[in-house]
Image 1 (tube, rainbow, N blue to C red):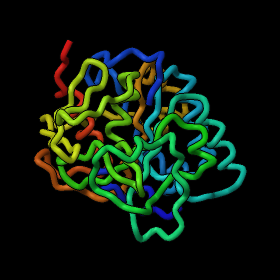
Image 2: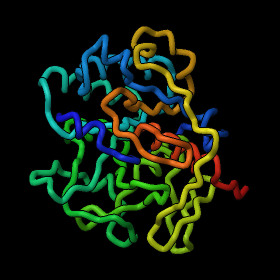
Image 3: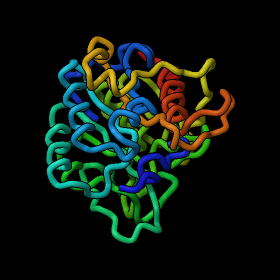
Image 4: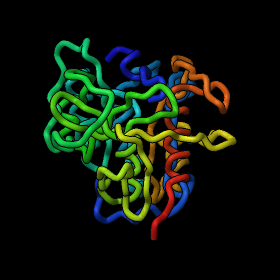
Length: 275
């Protein structure tokens, strides 16, 4: 996997036994970053998939409720490392990311179970993209797309002939333990929460200040010192090392994955409760 496939996301599940939208982003999520210290110890991006698998095993063992992987796993690497990673993905509800890219000549197949059918409207749209390897997709709960470059964030996109969910929406579903109800009322409901959208199923996110900077080093996951911080959380595993592109935002310059985290946090904490 080329480095750009892991970091090129300039801005960018259902689990019936989870507690529905328990509280704020900080209460429900933990963010883990593969950072410069992790790279110094385990090698530069892309990090070895056996090391990733070890980290995912530790996240599951810590009692996390779910995992959102904020980088691409669409190309094969070492066979044994890939096998170990696939096995680790089965230990916890996981969401993988994908993206649209019509220049991709040989996309991996996207299983129908990861689509919303053909009737829902979504934008942007493409007929090809970076889709997780089937050997990984077979073990995860959902796949979400990450095609946005501003605070106007699609909740639904179009891949080939199907509507598909964004990674942001998949993460919210995972935390809520509820599938999104998408209607023609310019809103998406997840549990008791309402996300207002436009007629293209996009939401304009007002970033919450100050920026959300709390993160756990992947090193601390691997050595076990972060165990308590992961318990009962949805974990977002992202990258914040020196190779990440920077996004100009109202909160100041942010690494692309930190920007994704702040978009997710701002949307999650702003959605009104209709109970």
